[in-house]
Image (cartoon, rainbow, N blue to C red; front, side, top):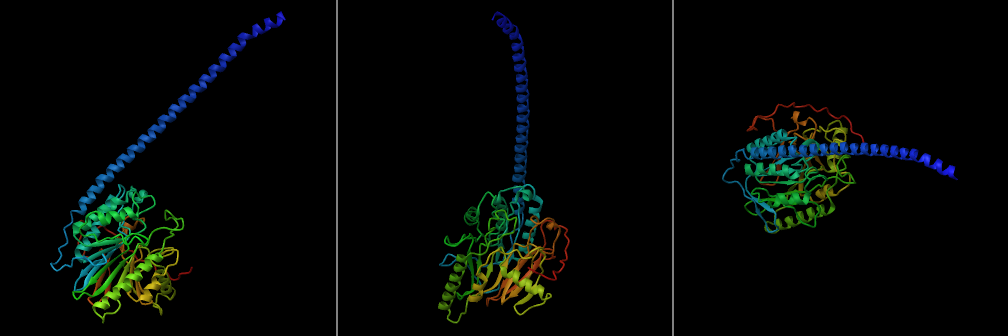
Length: 448
């Protein structure tokens, strides 16, 4: 027993030494972990500091750049309109109406694509220059933009703020003093944009713009910006109704548009259109019994499926007219699907045929398409785009850039003319860029 106690005592220093060694190793590991944590924390703090600095610098550049482009927008001269310029007034239904006995000129702009961020300041300025030059020369009674005023895509524009581009464009239009309105496009309100369609509709309708005729439309109808603008003669007859539709954006879970799944005009919008066509027909005939159906045009961003059907019929017939398709002008410069229409079915074209009111439909969306076809007696026209930003390298190309002039005669018929921005008649306040007027290789066959 005594021997065991002695042996236990003799091993105590060894245990103490081992415990001390373990404690020293543990302390070393803790020190290393603490050092790693401190290094990691420093790296994280450094990254956050750089991120904050980057955001701060780019935000400052965007603010300064946007202010510069607003200043540029306000630097253009006001359009010198004649004294007999028609001024719109609201009718008993709350729709704007122009009264005029001479031809009424509408200019369609589409896909202006102002980014409003730090990455696209120069291209935004180019778009402003183009729009100002064309409108100054044309002196339109009304400008209708068929979607995508803005392009708040961060990796190209450098911002999520879609109201920034709207403010720049509105500043230009108000400075020019032209009456204008718009139908929303898919890029005007992206899923990641700061402001949704309701907020943007409120901006356009309620910011006190003297010349903006945008109206959000009835609450019971899907979308924002479903509206009607009428052109009357001095006798009180409507000679032309202009219908604007919200063609919505992406659908079927394609929230960011990466699969090109686009929406269609909804049925309650079509019902709204039909009700108003019939209402104005009845009012016209009550005032003037010999008046026929009120003629009209329709404007929206995403093309109807009938654009695709008509173009394919024309191409598959060797670029020759068919029984149902009559070629008017232009070309299809888009690749892939060529016409990126809604993926679903809608009854708008069938309703147009049934009512016999709408003679022409105008859209945008596919920037390199600027063709116009008559399909079953209805003109289907792509407006020339303005875009300098959205498509890679599009700022270097010029064949597709311009506007579409629609001259409504006193009898309600209309002339439709595509106009290239690079004509001499469009004198720019700032130098026009040098571009390639590209040739489009015809598509010889289209198959599903």
